[in-house]
Length: 279
Image 1 (tube, rainbow, N blue to C red):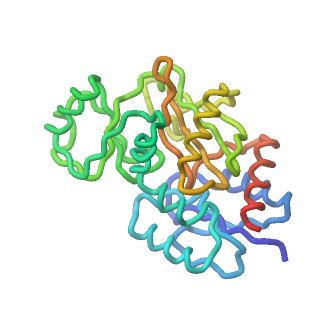
Image 2 (image 1 turned 135 degrees about the vertical axis):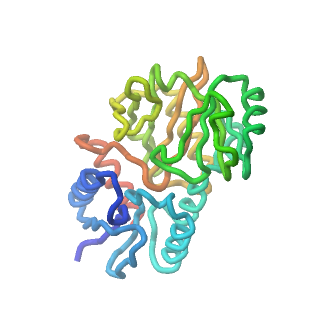
């Protein structure tokens, strides 16, 4: 019987289309003798599976207690790719502050457990910007993200948020995503938002193009991964430029789009990393 990988996918009713991404994963793993089976992320997982990977667990951030419960069950019963330790670490974006304390250039970030409009006024002054981005501490796919030019437009009370200066270069040149397998750089894309938007997901009309990143960007991504609790089997490092400085926006270790479609080299790199992690 071939090795079986349970690929965690959205719960029924999730609004975004995930099956094309799964078919890319399935086809890539089929070539190396691994059977990929899609399983909704909150379902019980059959013991027939050799390992579990949350690559398509879209929507987990909408029920964080349930997600942590799933991780506890997986820790006791399955090999996971990435590891449970990495999945816990990457669930909360507070890891960005850890990276900053280690000297990694991240987009400047403030975390507030509870915030008021008056707090936002102070952060506008601290960052010396006209526009802020507010994100939930646990989030994905731009869910809950707010672009704010005036504190009066914010909710009167906000809980567990990250606050960052808006980076105008996202609209001008895009956001860069570098993909790594087993710590090694594989490929990269630039995600460009549609006219008048700042979000770089395809559901908002963004365009994605393959790029050859600079050596400095590849090195920055490697530096970011070296600060993870352990080496990920797969990772995506998102970056944005501001003047001459490149900042890390996020490290994605749970369910990132790895941009495998129609690229035989990246698919081969992916399948090799997963099969190695399943040993």
